[in-house]
Image (cartoon, rainbow, N blue to C red; front, side, top):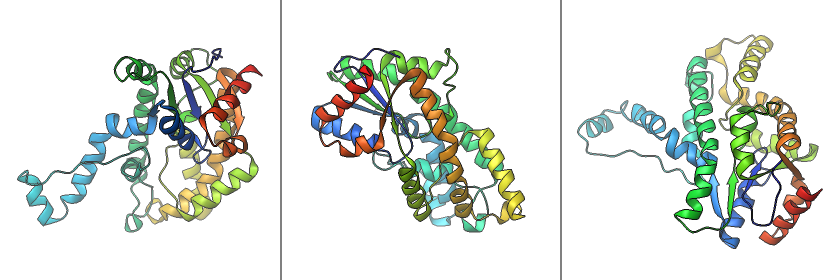
Length: 278
C-alpha cells in the first residue's frame, strides 16, 4: 500500500450508492480538489461514439429524423455529466425480450466487452489526470471516483495487475465498505429502478444460464427488468470479497456508515488518515 500523507491523491471505490460520488463532489466544491470520474471518462472519451451511434440508429427508424440526419440538418450528441450517466447506461442496455426494451444476449455481451476495455483505459488514465490537474489547471489535490465496477476488471491477487499498480502508485485507494443493512437498501433501491450495469463476463454468463434454467424461458422471452433485479442480489455477494481483496492488498477500508456521517472535507481526510495509519 502507498504510504499516505495529507493532501495526497485519493481514489475511492465501492458499490454504487456507498457515497463515492457524494464525497468526491464535496471535495471538489468545498475543498477545491480536482474530481476525476472514471464513469464520466468512459462515457465521454472511450464510448461516446458508440453511444451516439446508437442514438442515430434509433433516430434512423423515424423517417422524419432519418432525412434530417442524412442531410446533416440535425446533430445528435450525448450529454453525460458527473451526476447523469444515463446515456452510458442506456447504451449498455439489458438482455431479453425486445418488446420490453431488451437486446439479444450476444449484443449485450459485445457492449459489455466494450465497457470493460473502456473502463480499463479510463482507470489507467488516472495518473495522466493527476498530472493534468496540477500542471494545466493548477489543482493541488485530486480525488478519483472509480465507479462501481472496478472490482470486475482487476485481479487484486496479482501483484502485477496493471490497473491496480497504476492506481496505487498515484493514489491512496480507499474502499468504502457497506454492511448487510446497506446491501438491503441497495437491493430495495435497485428493485424500484433497475438500471443497466457492467458485470464480469464469466459471472454474467453463469447468471444468464442459471436464470434461463430456473425459469424455463427462451432468451427472447426474458423480461429484462426482472432478470437484472434477479442478478443484482447475486452481484452484491459477488463483488463484496473482490472489493475487500483490493483494500487488503492495495489500500485501506472505511465503512459506509462512517462516510454517511461525513459533512465536510476535514472530517473525510481525518477518517482517511486514521485508516491509513491503522
